[in-house]
Amino acid sequence: MTPPSQRSGHPLDLIPFFRQWRPGAVRDLLYTLILGLGFGLFFSALYAYDLPRDRLAAQLRFNFVISICIALSIHGLQALGDTLLRAWLRSARGWPRRVYYIAVPTAGVFAGYFIGVTLQDPATLRQTIFTTSVMLSFGVISVLVSCVLLFAYAVRERELVAKARLEAEQRRALEAQLRMLQAQLEPHFLYNTLANAVGLIAPAPDQARLLLERLIDYLRATLAASRERTAPLQREIKVISAYLELMKLRMGERLRYRIEIDDGAAALPLPPMLLQPLVENAISHGLEPKIEGGEIVLAARTEAGQLHVTISDTGVGLRSGASGKAGGGVGLSNLRERMAALYGKDGGITIASNAAGGVTVTLRLPL
Amino acid sequence: MHTALIADDEAVLLEFLKAELAILWPELRVVAEASNGVDALRLIDELAPSVAFLDIRMPGLTGLEVAARLQDSPAAPRVVFVTAFDQYAVDAFEREAVDYLLKPPTRERLEQAVKRLQRQLAGAGTAPPAADLLARLTAALAPTGAAARLDWIVAAHGSETRMIAIDDVIYFEARDKYVSVFTEEGESLIRMPLKELMDGLEPKRFWQVHRSTVVAVKHIAGTTRDFRGRTLVKLKARPEALPVSRGYLHLFKQM
Image 1 (cartoon, rainbow over the protein chains, first blue to last red):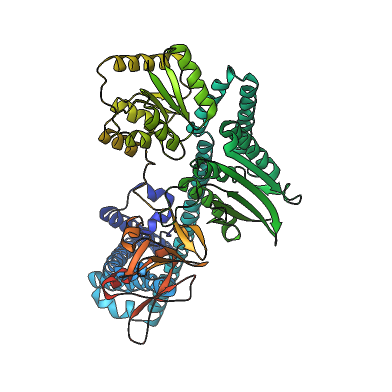
Image 2: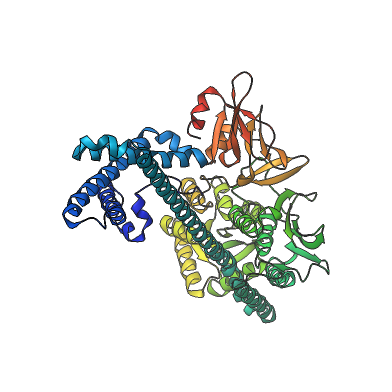
């Protein structure tokens, strides 16, 4: 995700109250005037509060004209600079960018002050502006204010990026969970299984009962899994066993399977429903399209500080050269996304052909 | 007397349909049962039944493929497709007015189908499903979005074949008759022209930088120049640098 590095809007947007109006040329100009009046008031309060009443009005007017001039100069220079240097600004980062955002307002301050004084009292120009103390105090103040603004921008930008990332993460997690549930209750699977149950009622009621019991096991485990963050591997194996038993009742001789779990691996925690889609893929894309069916082997063992889970089938295999939209692409992409979100670089998945002509999927998970 | 073939890869469903038909249409003689599309086609050729109940998802050949191959056969049977719930299939069948049964077929629904078959067989026999209709059905039942984005590619990696996620690809390089795929784990080969491959790639995520090179944008570390002044792309996860042709230099102007 690209951070919103483009500076947009107006410094007043840093204050939540001012964010209720949409950015635009007129609004921004109005904000600049408000900011100018604010600064005028602030500096008048600092320097002119103890003046006698008869001189106060004149001094206040003088100050406000100056501050409005300064505000408009900064506004104008910034707009000009942003337009002229648009291409550079798009890629500039770090110090060059910071220097730009300090230099432009500072130049604006001097330009505005010069214009303001020239407009009102050109005779005093020499003593009011071209003195070391004025130059110094104006320079220091404008650099300071620019730095504070820059800092505030940086903080706000970081907040926005963090917020956007959090929202994206939450949305992704929710989507993944939804897709997972949808995949488990795939209509083709559900209706075919129920059709089998109906078909078995008259000729083999015991078989029908067995099939429905396995379906209930499977659905119960699925729903439980969708509410948990992790579950021990052996629980996932129970879900898979229920699923495979059920498919065996349907496919008969065409499905054989073995499950080999090392003693050390059985209790390891695992995100639920991580493996089940792979077993389902092995059946629907490996064994079901093959006339004589085949075998599925699920093995889990710990190795070099990792949990290795392999799911091998003797099905029709990967069609070489073909682009891989087929072969459970959506389910696999979903799985990859979950793995990446959970483990980052520490986890991995490889999908490759095996000696039996089928497919072996290997998951590597950190312990 | 009318004869029938039933094809379904799940034995229980086949037996069930046979038993139900025995009740609803006792005169119909089921002469053949098939558990895959290849057997179904062979048995229809051999026995020429008047009716065929074809499961859609079968190993070997799908029900639709079996029907399509029966086009030229003089004794093509009336076909009823059987499918588990599948919204695409149901929509397509409804639209094309093809006979179909949902699994598990209820007795009422099966009775309707039987009556319609009996009417058709009693009449001069309307034509079996035409080729273009089957083509439309096949298209409607194909996995959706297949033409769109590529998520995985199947490639040769050493002596084995692997599925590589598009997200893992760093760059593609066209060779003579195939394309090399480079990931962090090395080089794999796909037998597909680069042009065709690029149709499945998102232009935002993959840039062609040379006639024969396509790079994943997120793996680009930056650009550099060699002693001859050519621009080269540096990669985050691989040591080699890839030359950029003049025609593609504009991609890097805004970087």
